[in-house]
Amino acid sequence: MVPRGGALSGGGRAILRPLFRKTHHDNGAVVVVVVRAPPPPPPRDVEWRRRRLTTTKWTTTTTMASSNSNSNSKSTPVVRCFDGADAATPTFPFSACLVGERLGKENVRVILGSKSATRRQIASEMKIEHETMSADIDEKAIRFDDPGKLVEALAKAKAEAILKRLSKEEKKTEEKKRTLLITCDQVVVFDGKIREKPETEEEARMFMRSYKENNPCSTVGSIRVTDVETGKSASSVDVCTIHFKEISEEAMDFLIEEGEVMWCAGGLMVEHEKVRPFVTKIDGSEDGVMGMDKAVCARLINEVL
Image (cartoon, rainbow, N blue to C red):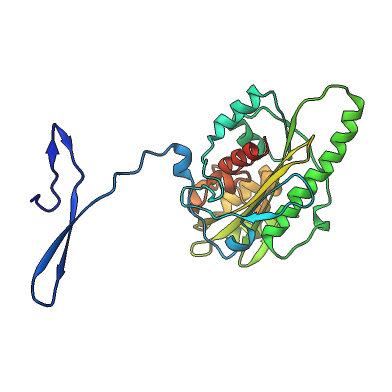
């Protein structure tokens, strides 16, 4: 018998440690059951380590993925697994960098429909060669109380606006190249209320002052990938939660004077060197908080290709 916590060895190789469980019967006899532990899971890559399960009250209603090549397609609920994979997509994870290499090899043109410098940076980190195009839609004209429905509707509206512009451009040129369009939108939810980009410096300061210890906020973001030629698209809505300690007035002054915070939903810039020291925990991925989750974007691109 192997001592508790010990290990057998044979031929220089360690054998799985057995676990012991004692069961007492009415007659006083003791049965020892030996259960061998399962082998350890294979090592995970860096991208896997960054993915965490996010559970919020919006998860069941807003975490949706849809792949539609025609108007009769249906949206499918996505079950978020602990490693960031979707239960409906067993081939996850697609490496965020490998998808960039695939796009390059297949000579696919990528348009990022966003003004966000952060999203451009994320796309570059994924090794996706891209150009940018702004949708220039009236975002205030699209309203939903549910944050998931709101960001999904805005990402779709941005895609439709850019597609109209692209169709006009195609008529002027004979060159045809497969093109993917990526559109995104994000809002911050704090204390049950939706926050979009601050309209004034005072509102930006009010937003930042409210982020304190034991008072976290959540980002609800949507990514939509569309094949410009076929119209096939895939989208996803993801939620991340950010925990803060009180942001200093000095940091707020710097951010407002710099001006970039005015382009961020909820005045939230967790990646900024002035804000990072006040972030204590992120439930989700940092690039998801920044506006475009790499793993989710890679999965959607592969779905559409």
